[in-house]
Amino acid sequence: MRRATSGHRRKCPKCGGRTAPFDLENVEVDLCFDCMGMWFDAGELSRAAGLRFNARATGESLAGATRTGHRCPRCAVPLYEREIDEGSGILVDQCPNCSGLFLDRDEFSQTRSYYRALGVREKERPQQRERPERPTYYGVEADEDSTGTILFQLFTGLPIEVNVPTRTFPFVTIALLLLNTAILVMAMAGGLGRWVTDYGMVPDDILHGRRLYTFLTSMFLHGGIAHLVGNMYFLYVVGDNVEDRLGHWKFLGFYLLCGLIADLAHVIGHPNSMIPTVGASGAISGVMGAYVVLFPGSRFVIRIFWFFWYHVKIPMPAWVYFGFWIAFQVVCAALDLPGIAWWAHLGGFACGVAVGLTLRALDRNREELSAATRGY
Image (cartoon, rainbow, N blue to C red; front, side):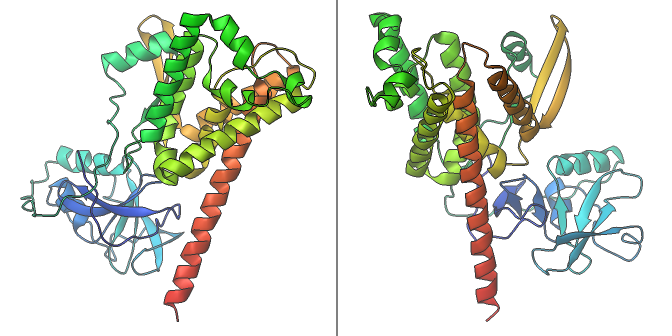
C-alpha cells in the first residue's frame, strides 16, 4: 500500500487538476488525481525506477523535441515533448529549465521496463525515511488479466475500473450499498410486489400531489436481485472516487439530489404513467456523470467474448464507455422503449455532469485567485 505525504500541492501541467505528494518506491513525486499522471523533479525518475540512467534535459536530448502548451509546475516555462530515450517510443514532457518530467498514466512502468530490457544497472535505492503516519490511499489495484477478472467479465459483461485510488474510506458509498441490499431482502421477504406498489413512484400520483414520499423511497428499492447487483456494482466503481472528491456528507446530498432530478425527469417524460418506478439507477447515473467530469483520466477494461474463454480485451477511457452508455439511453428514450426509466437515467446523468463542471470551474477560479494573490 502506498501512502500520501503532506506538503506542497502543485497544479497538473497536463490537465490542470489537483496533485498531491505521492510516495513512489520511496521517492516523493506529485500524482494528479484527475488524469493519474505524475510529475518527477530532476533525478527522481531514475531513483524511483531504481536504475542508473540520465533523464536530464540537455541540448542533445531536446534537439528533436516539440514545444507543447503545457507549463512546468515549478518554473512555469513551456514543456517539451520528447522520447525518454532515442528509439524508445515513450514520449514524455520535460522542462528545459529544471529537467522536471511529466509522465502520463502507465508511462512510468513502460520507462522502467524499457531501461531494464536494455540491461541498465540497478541503482541503490534511498533508505526508508522515518515519517509521521500519513493518510492511506484506499482501493485495491485491479489485476485486469487474472482468471477471476476474466470469469467475472465472462458471466456479467461488466467493465472493470483500472484503479483510481482514493484518500478517504467511502463510508457513504458502502452504507448506501448495504442499505439498498437490506431493503431488497426485507421486500422479498414481505412480498416484493406489495413493496413496489406501496413505495414505488407513480408519475400520475406525483403530478396530483399524492405520495410525494415516493421520491425518496423509490430510489432505495429494486425490482430484483439482478437489478440491485447491476446498480450497486456501478455505485461501488464510481461512488468511492466521487465521495472522496466531494466529502462524505456532500456526496450523500449530491446522491439524493441526482435521484430527485432523475425522478422529476421520469415524471416529465411520462406524466400520465400509472406504473410504479423503483431503483437507484437515476441517482447512480448522476454519480457516473460527475465521475466522467472529475476523473477524465480514469480507465475501464471491457472484454468481448465469442467462444467461452476466447475474447478480445479492450481498454478505454471511462468517458468513452459512459459516452456509449448515455448515447444508448438517448436512443431508447427517443424510441420510448418500455420497461426501463430511460429519462431518469438521462436526468440523473445531466445533473451529475452539471455538478462536476461547476466543481471544476470553482477549482480553476480558486487557483487563478491564488496565483493572482501570490503575484502581489
